[in-house]
Structures are given as C-alpha cells and as structure tokens.
Length: 381
Ligand SMILES: NC(=O)C1=CN([C@@H]2O[C@H](COP(=O)(O)OP(=O)(O)OC[C@H]3O[C@@H](n4cnc5c(N)ncnc54)[C@H](OP(=O)(O)O)[C@@H]3O)[C@@H](O)[C@H]2O)C=CC1
Ligand SMILES: O=C1OC[C@@H](O)[C@H](O)[C@H]1O
Image 1 (cartoon, rainbow, N blue to C red):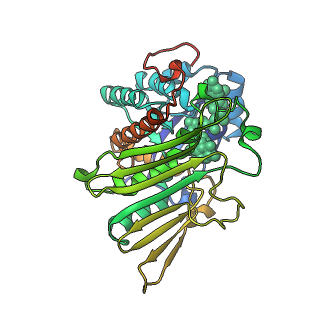
Image 2 (image 1 turned 30 degrees about the horizontal axis):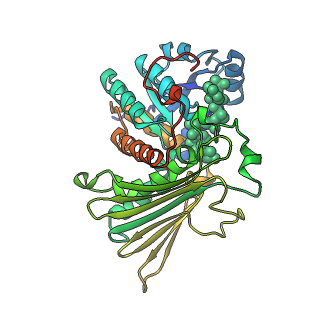
Image 3 (image 1 turned 180 degrees about the horizontal axis):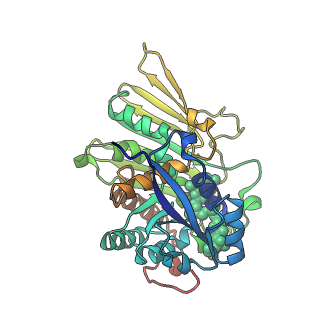
C-alpha cells in the first residue's frame, strides 16, 4: 500500500523583500490547487535585519502563527526546526548568506543570480558537497509546466536540430531608467551587484542554455564561447544594456541573449512586439511570449506546409505566482535524497556564472571588492 501523506518540508525565509513575499505566499498555498499531492510545504521561521519586520512578514504572508520571527540571519540558520532556507537578499549578499546556511548544515534554495561571480558560486557548491546538503539556484522559470513541455518537445526533435536561440528580457518603460531607479535601488546599485545582466539577463541566458546546453547529450554539454557588449548606467557604472552572442560547441549553434533597462521586450504592454524567445531549428521554430521569467504561451511554427500549434499555459489560471513549482522540486529532491536538481544541476549554474564573468571581463565591469571576495564571514552581511 502506498503512503498517501505528502512529504512536507520546513522552510526558513531569509529576508523579507519583494520576492521573499511572493515566494512565501506561494509556499503557503494548498498544493492541491495545482494538483500536487506528493509534497507540501510549511514555513517555520523568517529572518530579517529587523525582528519586527520578520514578524510582520510572517503575518502578512499568512504563515502559521507558530512560525518564529528572527531579527538576524544567523539565528535562522541555527534553528533546528528549519530544513531548507530560501535566500532572498540582493545578489551582493547571496555568497555570505547562503554560505552561513550551508555551513550550519541547512539545505538552500538561493535566488538568482547564484552569486556575484563564478568563484563564489564554486565555493558554495564545494561547501554544499562537503556538508552533503542540497543547493539550488532559484531559476524558477525552468520549473513551469510550459518550460518542461518545451524542453521535451525540442529534445524529441519537434523542430529538428536547433542552431539558434534568441532571448530577450528588457524592461524599459515610458520613463527614463534614471527617474525609475535612481542610484540606490538594487537594480542599478553596484554595492548590491545591481545591473541588467545579473538580474534580468540571466533569464535570457537561461532560455538559451535550456536548448543549447541543458538538453544536449552529456558529451555535447560544453561551455560556450562568448562575445559581448555592455553599456553602463550613468552615475553608478552598473550595466544597463547588455548583449551576448554565445557559440556552443560542437555545432557552434548561436545563442543571442539580450537585456536592458532602457528599452522593452513589450513596449505597449499588449504583446504587439511579438515573441521574446525564438528557438530556431532545421524543421521549424518555437516562439515563446514573455515576460520570459513567467512565460505565458508558446507557438510552434513548423517548416512551410505544416500547421502551427499554439500552447497557452493554463496553470496561469491557478492561484499564485508559480514559484511553488521550484519549491516542489526542492521538496522532491529532499525526499529522494538528491543534493541537486536535475533540471538545474549545479555544474550548469557554474557555467552560467562563468559566462557572466566573461561578459564583465570583456567590458570592464567590476563590483566592489567587498562583494566580489571569497572572504567569509564579513561583518555587515
Ligand atoms: N525569481 C524572481 O522572479 C525574482 C527574483 N529576484 C531576486 O531576489 C533577490 C532579492 O530581490 P528583491 O526581493 O526584489 O529585493 P528587495 O530589495 O525587495 O529585498 C531584498 C531584501 O534583502 C534584505 N537585505 C539584506 N541586506 C540588504 C541590503 N544591504 N540592502 C537591501 N536589502 C537587504 C532585506 O530584507 P530584510 O530587511 O528583511 O533583512 C530586503 O528586503 C535578488 O537576488 C533578485 O535577483 C527578485 C525579483 C523577482
Ligand atoms: O527575477 C526577476 O524577475 C522579475 C523582475 O522584475 C525582477 O527585477 C527580477 O529580479
């Protein structure tokens, strides 16, 4: 007889900002609303730099009244009731905060970009492996049913051999970025590892990677050659317009990933601009409609003479943001004793970090030493 009780994991939430709220509200939803019955989630604690903020956060997200509110991150990492910590601080802090939790023996789901640079990411992976704890970068988009379906279709050869992928995530609007972001906001503040690439461009890169790297046979999963251009944001020097061409061996397939804060993938907010991702193969093309962090639908356009197929993501009708898909993956990995996710192996996160390092090197974008360093622990994090 099978045990029908779901496998429940106990979350600790580290930081109380915008995405921590969205993620936590998704966690407390009943999994049956998304037809999931094998795993479930409970929030047992949250930590903020202010204890009061942590308590307000737990209440406003609808967490159980027994959940503990901590006024510092170290207390959360030390809580024996926490199985896994969701790290939701700015990029600049991921290395210090995730390391704190890993060293305390906690499993970790860390927001994207995993760290500021590849050396920090390698160190986290090394520690996770040493401690035998689970670590995953929160590239939530990969876990949407739409993305799962697309990887399956392309792997099965629906559009033949893929030779080129275009992907864009640019979020300029009617105002100027200067008026919108100023100089302090984490989107442009170099002290917080701000900039278009680590925050938004990573989605363009992950869409390229899903098809030109991830679904390739293991012997063909090779790091790309990268050429890039980057324009800096006035007054802070973060990147505001970044474009990469990646050439993936052995076919030298091209992945063109773009991002920007001054132009938009969807200028009129009506989808008039067309697809934000185009996956081009020898038998046709698949177009994905953005925003690509939370894609809405895709279209398959086979070679002339065939009918095109539209796929709308029906799961968008169910409650929540869709961040629960990645949370469910974490629960299944913990249940099955896996220390990393097959949908985003740690090695792939490292290759993506290497790509972003190369873009920064090619264009002279260096963040302050205190957030590029491997030194740990540092005060103030
Ligand atoms: N998956 C997705 O769709 C999204 C992912 N993200 C990712 O999530 C992370 C956080 O982004 P977001 O929630 O938008 O950021 P916010 O600025 O809204 O929140 C960040 C939180 O981090 C904590 N923090 C700790 N130190 C600092 C510091 N020096 N400056 C500012 N905040 C600090 C704060 O929590 P406290 O005061 O409680 O300690 C703060 O609320 C980033 O890595 C980003 O890339 C962001 C948006 C969407
Ligand atoms: O991950 C993200 O997706 C949505 C964007 O608005 C946000 O800046 C980014 O961090």
